[in-house]
Image (tube, rainbow, N blue to C red):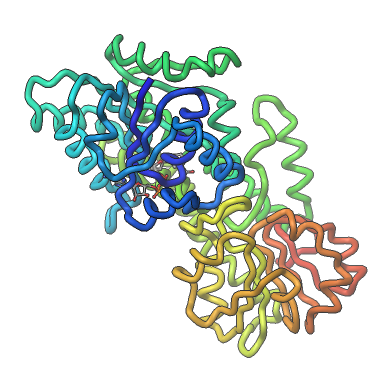
Length: 439
Ligand SMILES: NC(=O)c1ccc[n+]([C@@H]2O[C@H](COP(=O)([O-])OP(=O)(O)OC[C@H]3O[C@@H](n4cnc5c(N)ncnc54)[C@H](O)[C@@H]3O)[C@@H](O)[C@H]2O)c1
């Protein structure tokens, strides 16, 4: 089966490579010349564990190709996926559908035979129908179907998520489209991954509902962490105590600096706007957005308080910049407002992230010093702030940090360290929602 994937970003590249691995012939259409040149040269323009090998193997087997020639990519394709960005629209919080609509128009012009046009991008309710209108307008009478197939993969474990999904959601009203997509996803039938067939609006909304729910779980435990700090309780134990309840589940109950990334912030905001537009305000989601925004903005205050009320003239080591480990994605990362405020308040920031520094340079103040490793960042620092819980930071021995640093303040925004050894090494150790943190 031949398919085309429009957009060679996190979702398009991973989905394209995984469909190729399932045995389909996939052409990824990428408009950005630099990204396309990298892909042609065998380089992966994003960091995602295992992706380089998967892309190389499938390109070698002639099942995966990259181009900017949409017409050629659509030749004989039974399905064309739209996997372009849907960032927050400047000014109003709605999803910006400029790229999706442009892709739909380009597809409409380039189609040479029947195909299912599938949105993999996260798109507001009504987008599938709008795409159908666009295509009908450009190519009156042309035979095509639309479907919504939202993607649930997580950066950092995207390949495993795609290959072994909890479920696949497919929204379409056409039996022919259902048959094409059923065939494409057939390898997942063998591992009995549930496929949920729905209408288009339902599939579109399912994705927002899933992300909003998870964002709500994170925000819930963050607020419980704040309460723990007031009453002397331990959020780690509470997360375990509630998470073991099968009705609640253990995932997404890690207290931290607030959620970031390419999806939760923009998708909660977009859902809030969709709900308002349709006259069914999602008040819980509105609260999640507000609580998370103020949490991220307030994290630097915590660091400043841990440093005795001022960071002016102090050197702060920052470990981890990406919004989570195992990705180079810096979109809406909590590190951005934290580092900006520390620099604004007169600190010298020495930062290290295993994969995110190329992206970070574009988003952080220009005078941040980027280091080769964690200990180099810690060298001579008055305080150390851990923002992203990369595995390599977990293993840092307190004694080594103590001999590298000048000061003795550690602010662990992910609760990765054991407070006992940190204190034994002489550190003034602060974490989130656990006893003996700052109030
Ligand atoms: N990143 C994630 O973890 C994730 C997970 C699930 C869903 N999503 C959703 O998937 C969509 C894509 O996200 P992403 O993170 O992959 O975005 P991205 O910005 O990494 O990738 C989008 C790519 O599409 C390309 N592009 C845009 N218009 C094009 C066109 N007309 N023709 C060819 N290429 C074009 C861009 O150059 C870019 O490389 C978004 O709607 C997002 O919400 C993302």
